[in-house]
Amino acid sequence: MLQELLIHQPKDPIQFMLDHLQRDNDMVPKIFILGPPASGKTTIAMWLCKHLNANLISLQNLMWNEFSELAAKALQFHEAKKPIPDSLLMKLLLERMGNPQCISKGWILDGIPETREQALMIQTSGISPRHVIVLSAPDTVLIERNLGKRIDPHTGEVYHTTFDWPSELDVQNRLRIPLGISEEETAKRLMEYHRNITRILHTYPKILKVISSDQPCVDVFYQALTYVQSQHRSNAPFTPRILLCGPIGSGKSLQAALLAQKYGIINVCCAHLLKEEVAKKSAVGEYIQPFFERKMKVPDQIVIRVLLDRLNKQDCISYGWVLHGYPHDLDQANLLDTAGLMPNRVFFLNVPYDSIIERLTLRRTDPATGERYHLMYKPPPTMEIQQRLMQHPKDTEDKVKLRVDFFYSNCSLLEEYFENAIYVNGDQDPYTVFEYIESGIIMPLPTKVPL
Image 1 (tube, rainbow, N blue to C red):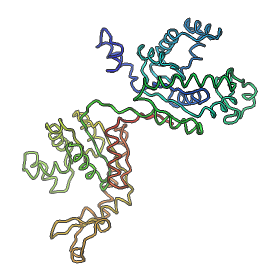
Image 2: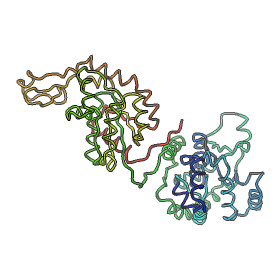
Image 3: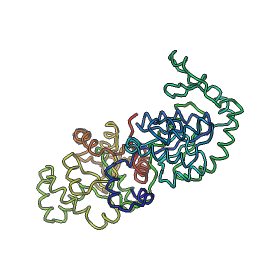
Image 4: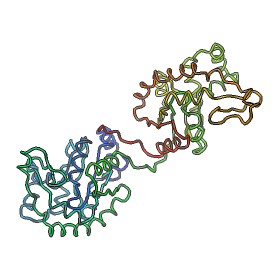
């Protein structure tokens, strides 16, 4: 929204922002696809449009708009084999991008801009892409590829005699050889492209990705799709409010400690907060203690009261927080949302049941020193220590299974509630898990597009 305000500088910024919010199109595709002749940019652009449900804009379909006077003028230049003036091209682009379909679903611009001057005019007119893809390949490959190009006049689909020949006989029969694909003409167009592209690239340094098109078309497409589904890192500051979800033994406590240590955010464990209130013998702690003694669940209203008191303290507000051990179910998630403390990053740590059993049931404690051991990962150094080790009653397989089953009975509802959650494989080295979580914190959330 801020970018749009700076570009358009409306006389009534409040109304402009209200209109912008009502359009709700901040996440729609706005993509430039550039590349030399025969690089496959039109094919990639069409495939992306189908997957992203966006509108394809090319010089050809701009000219063939029978309801536009501007298109009629452009077509006259084209039929006279004269270049379309840049000023007319900009008017055509603005006319098409003002179409409600382009505003609501986004657009992919195929092969435009062709020069630095066009790129600057596009910027000046307020057209700002989110992603720019440039396809590249050796000239010898492009010349050879261009000679086999064929076009379906009915659909505009591009085919190739070697790499992409249609299976339907009627399509084969109506294919046409496009103009300007001889070796000399292709070499001339390549020279012109190379002269211009280096000057265009400097216009979009931070949103540009170069992809080699000298590989199977499907590979090029998936690289392009992966890039346009990503979001660029924002330099705007934000206070981390991180939620770690996962079954017991998934490593939430360790990851929370690592995040708190590296980023200086506050580690908030809901279970520890309740124990602290009981230990302090506070008024809330007196309500909690009977539930602890009877090994009963503490009521949600008491839990959320303790949690809100902690998350609203100045250190959490200033530095941010990482929460684990809450919420356990959909009702608790709703309470957190109602209190205005929804996290801006949610991670689900996925660990197989067998790994959880291995992690927890083999834990032991030395009653003499309080030292903790694990019979597989951190065995006791002597036989004497091993003989006196004790297992916590909660670490028996039956108790662990009950707690894991309880988590997964509510997990699907929580996953639906936190629809932008990031899923991490927790069954690997903890520092590898941390790197995945860290990348999800410092980078914006990906855009989900169904394949």
